[in-house]
Length: 150
Ligand SMILES: [Zn+2]
Image (tube, rainbow, N blue to C red):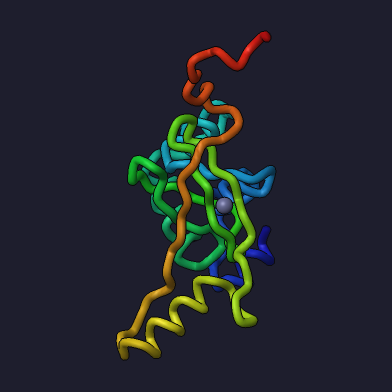
C-alpha cells in the first residue's frame, strides 16, 4: 500500500490506505457515495468529503481511474490499466474489456494519433465506453411466444 502510494508520488495516509485496500479487494466500479457507505458499514470513520478528496487525489495520481456511468455520474475504478467498459443500461453493471491493440498500440492511442495526424488538432486521451445489456438484465423483447412449445 505504502509502496503503491509512493510509486505514484503520494504520501501515505490512513484514508488513502483504507480506500486503496477497498479497491484492491476485487474489481469495483463505484461512486464516491458507494465507497463512503461501504466503508461506514465496516466501521471505518471517514467523512464523505474525505472520501471525495482522496478519490480525487488517487485518480489524479493514476492509482484509480475515473469514468462516467450511464447516468453521467462519476465512478471510480480500481483498475487503472488501459481497458474499456461495457455498461449495462438496465442493471448498471460494468464489465472490464481489455483495450484492443491496433497498429501496435491500444485503440485509444491509435485514435488519438490518427486524428491528430489527420486534423492537426491535439486530442486528449479518447475515452471509449460501450453500452449494452448484461445477461443479468431483464428478459429482452418477449416476442410473440409462438416459438415455445410445438
Ligand atoms: Zn474498469
